[in-house]
Image (cartoon, rainbow, N blue to C red; front, side):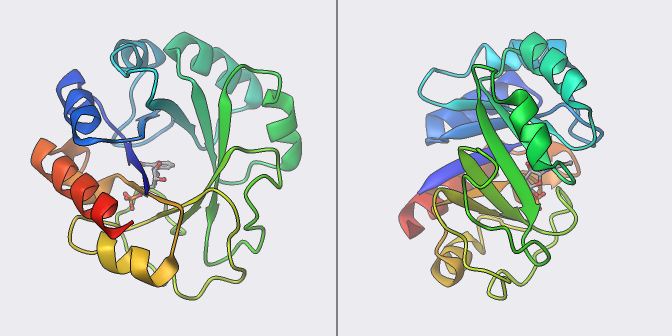
Length: 199
Ligand SMILES: O=C(O)c1ccccc1N[C@@H]1O[C@H](COP(=O)(O)O)[C@@H](O)[C@H]1O
């Protein structure tokens, strides 16, 4: 079970996630309570070991801005959340990074990982980063390939969600926070342990 922990803002929390077995760590380079600047993300990404993906998350930025910010942050993966089109993925395809396409699972029938040239697909709630669970048992199409379930996951519900949706991996932000934007190392560890046991 591949586990991504998203929205980290401190070295302490990155280290806790890596030590607990995270496979990818996300940094919000877009408007969010978890937003970090590219230079802040660079400090954090430098502490992520090579075997763990360091992911820059974007939601509304242009591809030109994404190129600039991802390079400044030194991330090895770019996550595009929202209304990005196939052309946007093509415009970034020459970069030496992996690409993640994140979709609203209840609304988007394009659930084949790789359809836009991406390496990973995230099937998320309609409001990304809200922490609100959604009905992942009612997808318009069965996802294929390397896809992560996201949206309202937590240490308490991730095992059940994995049993119901059978994803290749999981992604969490709000469910490992004590308050909006404030991660908790204990919850990060609990989430990773529960997810890995479920997979
Ligand atoms: O976390 C955010 O604030 C955010 C903002 C804009 C786009 C994506 C965002 N986060 C993504 O949302 C899911 C996790 O959501 P949840 O909080 O666990 O419900 C994950 O894919 C994040 O990358």
